[in-house]
Image 1 (cartoon, one colour):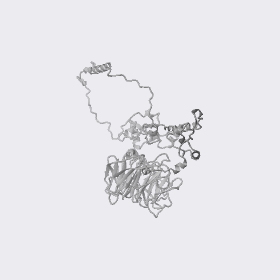
Image 2 (image 1 turned 90 degrees about the vertical axis):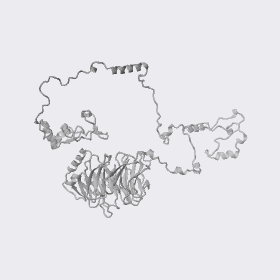
Image 3 (image 1 turned 60 degrees about the vertical axis):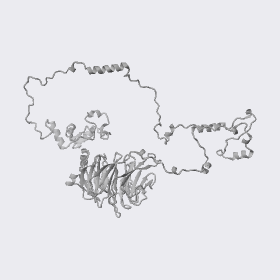
Image 4 (image 1 turned 135 degrees about the horizontal axis):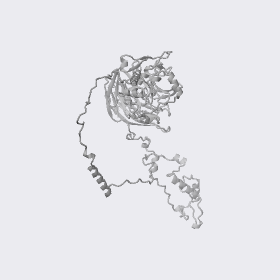
Length: 637
């Protein structure tokens, strides 16, 4: 049945499994069944059904008879009515196409009469029965070269062990890099006259000098011994400090160069500090590559300012929402506008679902949020998304919700609209959870408790997570790993635990008005942009106050963003520039993050005192997109 189904899908090839047209029996002993476009293994679905489970499934599942296994992906597929009819026709010996006429008049291309002359009377080639002279000449040249010694047999591989320098490529400033440097052993001071067994009288100590020498600390003494005078060499006794000095010498050789300072000497010593040494030594930007440096593409088409942009999980498509009441879908590599969808108001926010198995885009305008299926990319993903939405069944008990859910119909459905959510107030921001099922919306209103709502798309239900909001909510964000929820008001960022339903932390941004927020993919760092030209970096494990405050922009910050894989973050401002910074977060908890500004990107024209309104990174490449008040979207690579 699957082979017949594959005949129907030849027009639209399945791009999930790119292993090619090979026998799938080759993978029967492996846990995977092929490879996707990124080169990652496609694992077979876990099949732990025994005969009893198979029999129960056969008796209870009404669609068991039309369920077949796809050999390319190993998944179970439910055949549609058209595909079942196709299978029945082929089993009965009929043609697959209903409209095909099998009794068309036949045309006799070849005559049934035997002709005198054959089809071809070409004589046999001479080279088919005579040895080749060219090959003979080549072999003769090779034999002559071997005789003359020009061609020599391959030497057998040397079996002598090879030794490699482990620290050849290490940074000389690092600890491992210092191992390859040759440090000479500290030399001993040559003996002087005071070490003689018969020194001159001026080197001998008087009684007062001897008492002063004994009262001094061992580190402060100029001599480590008392000079003594003997009549002859035979009268010199054994040296009492011999073993102690040998031990000190071994320490000098083992821990070279070694310096012994007592606490009091360290306390009273005068420290001469170079002022340049107090400035932290930052690495050069060229050592921190890759990061975006040049403007590559400009996406033109909007007639008004572009407030929000978002990229698809694969990085192939880009969506932009503008005040001209349109949403445009672009191909990233060519800057070609593939689709334009008109909505009923100025678009305040767009967000592409981060789940690669779902093709949904959330669009907010006025008090409405539309979940739109653009139909781009993999046809199977697009149809699976429509099936997921159409398979929803309403519960028996319908609870009253603050948001009205409706299914799009008519002209809106043809444009791609699937679900329409009517809110009680204007929606300013939409953001997805990393799994792609939950959607958070922000409706700023200082006098209301309904400022943040969270929608669950699969169950079509809405919940208000807060009884009351402390302040005017600006933006929200989901934690990428743990069940935390970040809510930014004008001056604070509150971190809530969604499972325990309690406030975990309250971050003080030290700025007048927060405009935007982004969470690091690792989850332990947050950046906030503000209208008073500041960017605050929070280390959640370190403190509730900013670890670093950057004042690089001259005007208000409108948007901030982290890269999903590279140690990069960017900020867009009304001064028309995008500043890209290197932000390395180390796995060692004792090492603070390294923050280095690397590039200022300019290209947008300031329009009505507004510059860059939104920035976002490409999901896989070190590229950054920016949208501005000049109605363009720009790609910096």
